[in-house]
Amino acid sequence: MQISARFPNIGWDKLHEFKNVAAEMLEITKGESGNLQYDYFLNADETVCEVREAYTSSDAVLAHMAGVGQLLARLIELGGGMEVECFGSPSAALLEAATALHPTVYSYLQGK
Image 1 (tube, rainbow, N blue to C red):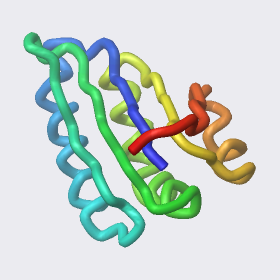
Image 2: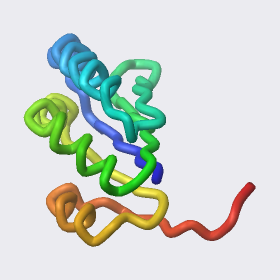
Image 3: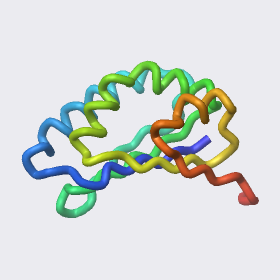
């Protein structure tokens, strides 16, 4: 399962704290056995951040959400919200847990 999370509006006065919270989340994520990828990208003027994530299963995503919950709430606040796209087949439990995030879900069609 892959996830793309976008923080669309990081204020210049919030950037330093945003980076610090993101670093804390990354440290937590390093200990997650079901996490395959967790990379942060900033646009040129550092006002938008895209996080690319990959997990072994929906359960791994749920474990991630539980582990970073309070930090994620702070990152959403600092980043001007969060837009989430999920690629794969999330479980009913994951969809329920992510309801407040309003994820756009894309089902797998084909690929290499």
